[in-house]
Amino acid sequence: RLYHLQIETGESLADRGDRQRMSKLTLQAARGNLYDASGMPLAVSDGRWSLYADPSYMDDRLRATVELSRLLGVSRDSLRKQFESSTNGRRIAKGLDDGLADEIRALKLVGIGLRREFLRIYPEGGLAPHVLGFILDDGHGGAGIEQVLDAQLRGVDGHETLIMDAFGKPVLMDRESVPARPGAQVQLTIDTVIQRQLQLALAEAVAKHRPKTASGIVLRPGTGEILAMAS
Image 1 (spheres, rainbow, N blue to C red):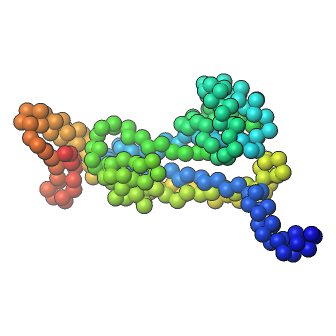
Image 2 (tube, rainbow, N blue to C red):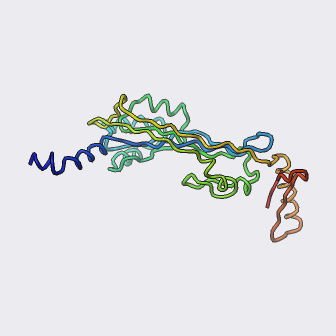
Image 3 (cartoon, one colour):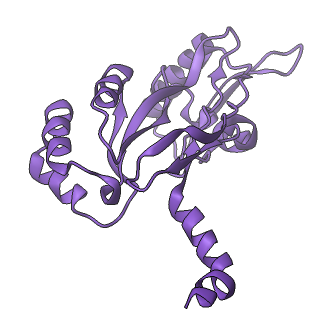
């Protein structure tokens, strides 16, 4: 039996033990911002926190249920169902600000972790939506500049590898961390003031003449730079 465990299956068992002891977390990179010609932000990444639970490592589910229900405003029944699951890496909440994340972190709940994630915000609302585009659920650009320059804007995710002890607690002195690299900042030739005027004029023309389609573009004659574009 000893020969079987140490010689025949020793290497595979060692690899299996390493996988059980190691936890690799992805550190999401901040997507690069988009600016208009004057430097006004058109698309920015807002850093928030998501709360995750690893039920198999939790040592006090009752306390976690009571405390997190109080802080998050989530029913205890809902949290209890999450914590009774056999699946680790369950996202409990997202979009948490720094203050709330600090309160949760101060509780030192085993099996509960926070990860930094970024939400895409468009400060000017519906300004130049066809030009800017949008972000898909998987974090990739879905249209417009967000899609065309997706590789440059996305940046490079980092990762953190933690070594867990027999009780599922991270060993603080034994970790590997590769920081995320944020995406590139991109300045467009779009002029926010002219873009807003073009969209308004186009909307009025459509309302008055009822065309099947309508589009408009404003160029700087000397350079060919696009100052505004709408459809």
